[in-house]
Length: 271
Ligand SMILES: O=c1ccn([C@@H]2O[C@H](COP(=O)(O)O)[C@@H](O)[C@H]2O)c(=O)[nH]1
Image (cartoon, rainbow, N blue to C red; front, top):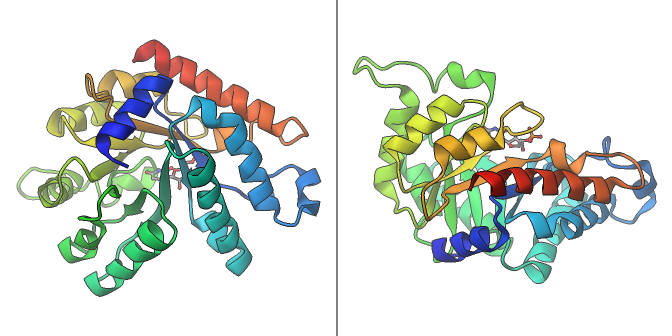
């Protein structure tokens, strides 16, 4: 998907919402457990209910890999379902890969070609050869961890270098020099709105994928106030548990839609 197509979809929907498909058999409604593929049945219902309010889906691969072969098949079916039925929606494989170049090329093939996701999240700490293989693929994006939403971001990303610069901004500067804004996004946590606003000043034209709204306490309004790119939007704001587990009853899809609509309405009011 091109940057222009993504921006057009955000404008059309008046939404920057990315629904995170962190599907856990211990949390989905019990009545789905008798389905042949409960994970896919849950995802399909969530996707059909929320597509109207969001522009992206982000399956976190850990939730599928945890179930071995059947989990991987559920993930492939989910991505294929989105591509076939909602082709304007941007699909993020939240896989956080990062390895030597030879291996990185295989990860790129697995997620961007074989599975046909639009993008993959990548941890940049192994350097250029571990990240560059995800670039240069027409219509595909590499989403690199910038400043993450978790408390542990302080441990390494917020270390100060002797130059007076933080580790994460030194890393982001390097990554930014390797790719154009047509294929690079940074992950920046919604739990750090002030830092997100500073990063927007530093990278005024690069899309940010922003997790941490809802269950982790971040606010979509604060993210938009500090992070939106005028005209281009520049944000995909993710909510996973806060949308997909809005109810564990028979009404789970309806409640997920209500939760997604509420976030969309909040975004629309601030765009
Ligand atoms: O900094 C990061 C990077 C990735 N994530 C992922 O996003 C979702 C958030 O889920 P919620 O249920 O909305 O909290 C999840 O897949 C994380 O692994 C993140 O939270 N922070």
